[in-house]
Image (cartoon, rainbow, N blue to C red; front, side, top):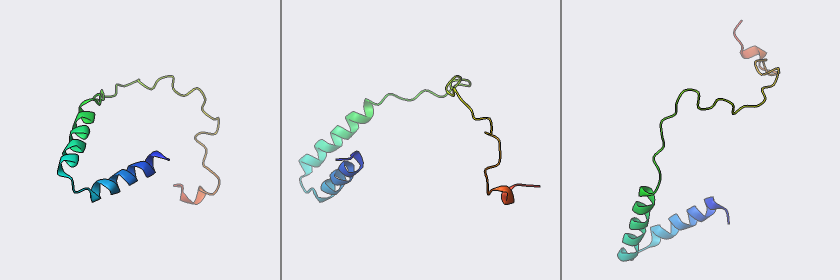
Length: 72
């Protein structure tokens, strides 16, 4: 089962739940999982250096069919 369909199925199941104790347990799981996510560090200038190993020769060329959209 794909992750997207699993998430959707869980959401639909949670919406139908009437058991308050079970809903509280789900809330605790959510809160604990959010606490365990490491905060992201702000990006620093130059952090992507060396990622691209190839840039096509025609990278700056106008794609065919887009000539009408370009400024003169």
